[in-house]
Length: 234
Image (cartoon, rainbow, N blue to C red; front, top):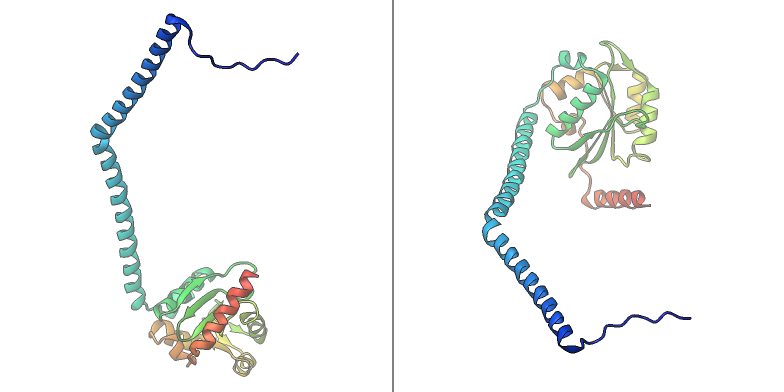
């Protein structure tokens, strides 16, 4: 047999009416007490909540101001950055990459160090509103070391197709072979050897002036950025 569903029925008799009234009164009393408790919490605890909120806002502002001061201090330091060849020679390979990043930043590029295993011939990538996108390949060598043509081939093969660069540069604290320099000049791979590095890092001549980089037309630069964005999204 199907079970009958229970249904509420109206109170019957005086006793049940009295019981229902008591239950209703208790429910109303509970709601009133909860409302009074909430009001009490709002009236008497708001200074605590206000203090906590003000403390959170103050901490956020302090962090923002400290970050802004740090960035200004770094920008001021980089604006007058000079690195001697002796300092460069004493660096590790990775320190050399970070130094090149800082030198680019000093010259007005938005630069970052990206060198790692499998970096496809890009240790530093930068962007400049007037000159476009640049890729630096860092070759930190012993004093007197030479960089050969194979490095130039590799950078040429990845700078544009892989990294979307307008400018490709190989930088060393040593020297380049004659063939490497000649091949680079024929195929638009710029080179910075020890002598040029001294002019850039130690004497402070901006890289774009040192290499006489051409300014990118605004439309061309915008088109390149759009193409890179589209390829990345794909």
